[in-house]
Image (cartoon, rainbow, N blue to C red; front, side):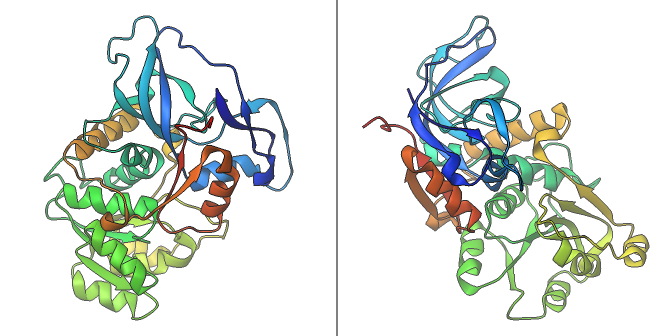
Length: 342
């Protein structure tokens, strides 16, 4: 089978396209023929390995997310049958086999049914972004552990960077769950993307006073903040937060973070840092169930018309796909794995 892998961490040039032996599932495992692989910032960051190249004990196939069709099941698996359409999550976390290959074997827990009529593009765009967004929205004491329609009714959610993949999923999930959503963006074009995603109110922080604009929209404050840039935004977050608000922080650009202590104390603000890989098992399973339900309801579409433009690459161009994400491509970068042998 065709696959992309690397044996040393470093720049995208360490990625090699070639052949690998076909894997087969063991007990409790499922083999998926990947149609589309999704690329996230975590994928190129893991591949880069930081400042020093590091040799790996075994070749690593990158990419956590993907979607495809079950083509083999291991002993004891009753949840899926050959031919079922599915999406997968955390494929390469602490495992050598991500989704940048034609066939991937995963524990059945990491394989989720993809409804008929929902594209593989949607399936490959879930995983890291949607599960992160779900955790960010449910970290508050005011939110349930598992989202469903109506569970965020009456709450105001502020999504920082609403044109990004996690921000896009957070807008969609929050709207699906009944929240009023405010999002911040950096340009009119990104405002259009956030609007297409379903945000009720959009603030261009480069064109207006973001604090004043958000306070005008939410005089009593926002209840949940989904934060992508804490180093730049925690001061704003503290100003616009409601009493007992939660600021969910899911990204790190390497800059020190200064917490405004007195305003945070006065408002009893909770700062919840999170990494989707290491959230407790019950919270991750709740996120998977909720995201699957939202997909079934048609609440997580992708594409330019849904506010998440797609940039496509072939499997042999995985290095270029990683570079595109590292360079800040707007929207979602996807790799077409099916037909990669030709």
